[in-house]
Length: 144
Image (cartoon, rainbow, N blue to C red; front, top):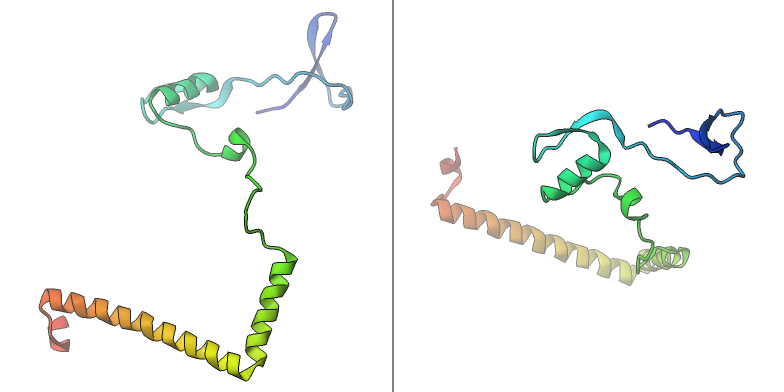
């Protein structure tokens, strides 16, 4: 959609060229309702050339136009409760260094990771065993 600058001169709407446009003056914005390409409503199959008619028909069909929602409903909210700050990053770095440079903490961390892996693979083994039991398979020769 092309953007043009207009000014009211002697009661007439006159289009200003780029050299005549003055940024400091405020003017109303006129948005063209015509779609650049005719658009088919997927819910009804009707083809529209008017943006407002298309949006009305989509809403009437119980649907919603999605895309560019940030522009339609406001920018993404900046109210994240747990923001990452420099302080949190440095705290995580200090904790990691404390674990890595203390032999007891490092051994405890590795032991915990090993236990987590054993639990994970144990659960995977149990799932596979349950599948074999459900299918009545007992050994390698029956999987072929």
